[in-house]
Each structure stands twice: as structure tokens, then as C-alpha cells.
Image 1 (tube, helix red, strand yellow):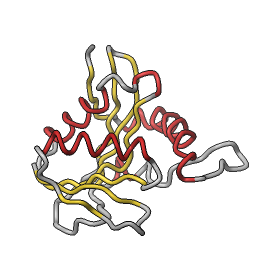
Image 2 (cartoon, rainbow, N blue to C red; image 1 turned 180 degrees about the horizontal axis):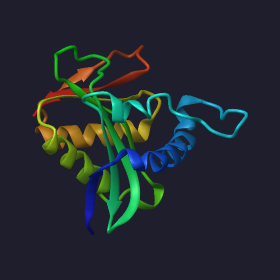
Image 3 (cartoon, one colour; image 1 turned 90 degrees about the horizontal axis):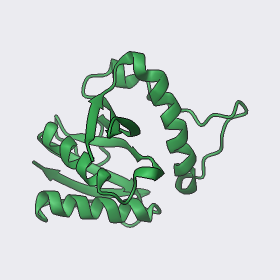
Image 4 (cartoon, rainbow, N blue to C red; image 1 turned 45 degrees about the vertical axis):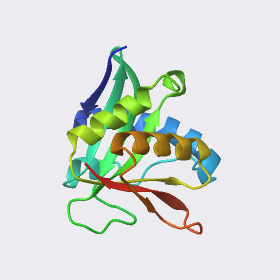
Length: 161
């Protein structure tokens, strides 16, 4: 299985918008968001991924087929150091889950973007909690810090690679 990350061009923005709708549909289980009267969830920061330094939109492909996306941004909830980055959104399509693809992609991202990381997830998203805990523990060999406290909506992990 060939799992790759491809930096998306601005011409691929319509593809990201469509994939974001699939992601938001699934994520509404945790966010409780509703669609607009036009039938869209939307995403306020799409354009920022081509206009703001430190943002990287990646397309995930498995054997050449579109399998999801990852958005990296320079805005963290808990880390305040210059140059720290976080995963804004991480989406692997249902068909490709539980195959190690998410772990492979996360590892590729961390290796590609060395430095200070914050990986957060919504507390009520138990699948994300289990996934990120396992990935970060393995990637860092248990050298990470917990971000957030029990009352925070988003919690997660901070590390440096």
C-alpha cells in the first residue's frame, strides 16, 4: 500500500472544500454543528491555507486514490513558542481507517515539519483521543506533555521532534 502526502495547490482548493464537507459531516457527531440553509457546513479558514505563512494543506492518497487531508497551521491552543505548529484538521476517509494509514501520515508530517508540535482533539471525540495518544506515545517514545485540563473542550499533547 502506497500512502502519500501531497501539498495541495490553490487550484485544488475546490477539492479541499468538498472533502471538508465530508469531514464536517462526520465531525458533527462531536461538534453538534448544523448545515446551513444552503446545505453546507463550510469552513472559515480555507483561504488561509494559501494566504497565511505556516499553513500547509495536504492531500492524502492511498495507491493514488484520494483518501483524506491534513491541515497544518501555526496556531496552537496551548503552546506559545514562536514556530510551534498544530494539526488544524486531520481526516482519513472511512474506507481507509484502521489500516495504519493515519499513523503513517502523522509520522510523515512530523518528520517533514520538525520542531515544536501541539496535537489537540475534542475531549468528546474518543476515537481521536485513542488514535492521537497511541501515535504521539509511539512517535515520541513517551516524551510529550499533556495539553489542557479536564474542563477544556480541546485537550491533547505537546512535543518537540
